[in-house]
Image (cartoon, rainbow, N blue to C red; front, side):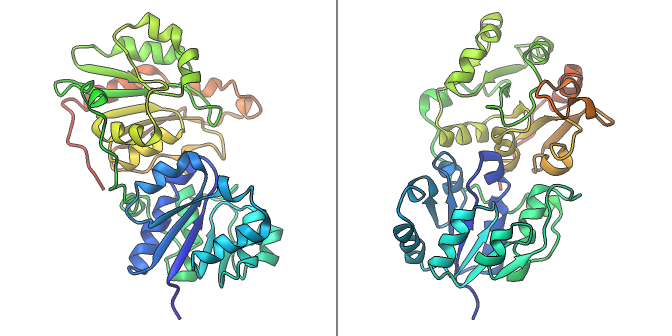
Length: 342
């Protein structure tokens, strides 16, 4: 009998979750009448709920504190007959087996999957030549999916159709006469950063009569960005002001975003916004694995290898990406082309 209900398990960061949304899209194309759950962390909930391919969000942050028997009962109560362990988690794998979920898909390179899963996919991410989103979809091969989807195909499977209304006070900040560009300088430690001096040079290269610039990030990151914000009073400071759902809606109305390999970069790309990502040429952090996927995504990376930065968070190869490369590209986008929604 064909599966009727799926759980996609991905309990890590925003960018990882964005690149997992196409798993739901492909499942929906293969099983249009199926119920699709997404098991994730609290802080990614608003992103998951924005995808029209997903029927219900399951909050792992709430479930993981429960006694094993109770958490297993909650999993069983979903009625799901298949779980896809996109992000391996020993506790979830054991709970899914205990809950009696019939189809349990995991990778062969986690020993506990050999005991907790019954459909194993040979998949090694670290040395693979494929993109993270392509690797995610390989877990659907036992369910009838192709082994390889192109990045262009994957860009059509996000399903970000349930965006929150943008608060009027935030919507009023957008300028229809200028290119609304979001700068997201920090990464919460999840990625190598371009550096404030490079952002400073980029700001100086963008005339305020053509570009309206916004700065986003957490409230804590906003404190770190105060020198930049004081130096350029024309910047609109949105740090700490938006929920994740509001940021998603705001990005959908913006014209572009500049960031390192962060969640907001992947969100912007998925929304069809001009997403300019700065990356190191170091495996497995390189754009071949983590580039933003979208019709207007663009990657900037230093050419050649950069082994000297591998063991340090202070990434010289990131800082060597010249700001004028980004400013020239941004000028090429004027006037802004219509944003593509998918």
